Length: 103
Image (cartoon, rainbow, N blue to C red):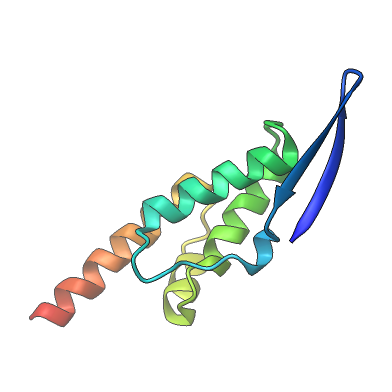
């Protein structure tokens, strides 16, 4: 567990976070929940800073956290630019894979 110390105005805030790169999707966790968790953790780490770099990092953490090499490859192949677009692609691909399994 990492602890980040951030100075905001004159107050020092301690923020405890798990390393985002080690985060992975649990079997009971939906892709939407995974994306929400990554957004929440990114806001803790970057203190609500919205930048292209933070968005790209969030997208990369999400793709790696899928914890499925085939799904990760297919999402990367679509070249999503944001966490939201990566989530939409992953949800669509997951839906197709589930449909194929059921047929």
